[in-house]
Image 1: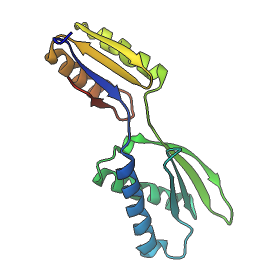
Image 2: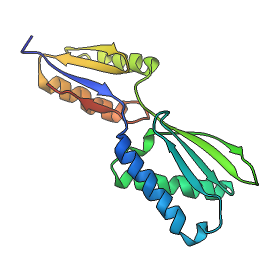
Image 3: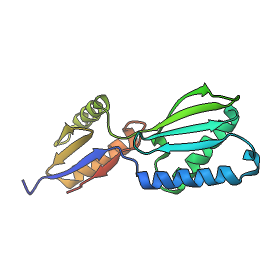
Amino acid sequence: MADNHAFDIVSEVNTAEMHNAVVQAQHEIAVRYDFKGTKASIEYDKKENKLTLLADNKGQLDTVVQMLKEKMAKRGVAVNALKRGKIEEATHDSVREVVTLHVGIETDDAKKIVKQIKGLGMKVQSQIMDSKVRVTAKKIDELQAVIAYLKENGPEYPLQFNNFT
């Protein structure tokens, strides 16, 4: 078994860096002139992996989202990990949006990834394990080809490749 190589396909968000990006965005909201006296804010629930964005109107909400994405990109957090919710009316003529962070690979997506890997026609095995997919092969080159393929053709949320042995 020592001559087999493997890696895990996961979808995770670095919560410490995400927290730092939120704090930076909150600070920018507090000091920017165009946000003075507005209800614009960001709340981060780490346990639920959710962000609650509040703003006076939809345009301002879009600005808050853009600002958050910029901070995430600077901190190395994948921007496409954000799953935007629907914009709802909040109290006092403001709007609210709950944004969730994509963590883990859903079963349907895991099945699609396994099917894509089988479709490559290489001598690799893949299996679904909880919220990750393990890929094994005898040759490292084949594993690297799978990684390259999934980087181009994977799902719309970010994938990481861990435990490469």
